[in-house]
Length: 267
View 1 (tube, rainbow, N blue to C red):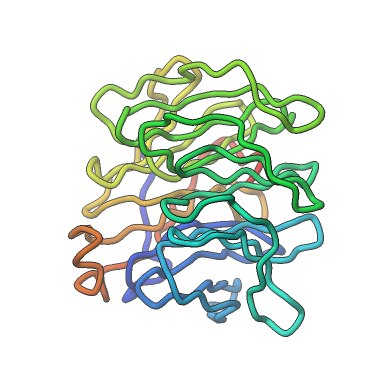
View 2: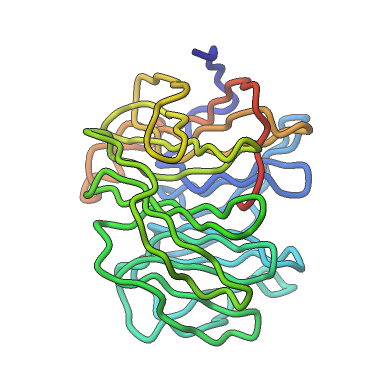
């Protein structure tokens, strides 16, 4: 089991870590901010979002794409830093996680799992997911894995050339562990975070546990980053429930653990 170090502390409910352009990015729901952390420790607020929960990713041009729970549209950051509507979800409420693949296709989950093409057109791909949470796309761009927190499993889909999803299946049964944010590594295994489990686990397809990092608070998401993508960054905080988010202020941490297998795929 890898040793864990504290990279940053004193934040609120921190989520959605991303490794992009040589920096670690993450969202602080309590503050309604998207931030990035440079190698020298400099912390920058890159965007502000008034309505968390939120998660984000980057389009092929490096623009920030943001999804908020109660939103009607996927938002895209304009050159002036403001978030502007980009693609209509078709209904409001319950939108949760986002991942952008290597072709520029965006996947957003919530009441449905949506495919949003680079031109902004939207097409539903799946529904009836057990509280869909983190998503990741494999290195070859052919598999999307979605965490179903309430169902305690990772669900896999095949990705066609046009971005459409098919072949829905249980990628990994996690027993009593409820998954949240996740990422792929070069071996095709997945690291996933668990809030009630207070851990991050590495599993292969089928559910075998290969490694584990234990924490003293909820693990909301994880991301393999750093120059060689062998640093497992974890966003963690004390969890008191959505109606008590204000009480999480100061409990949020960004943690790091060194692992043997580098990250791959998206995010």
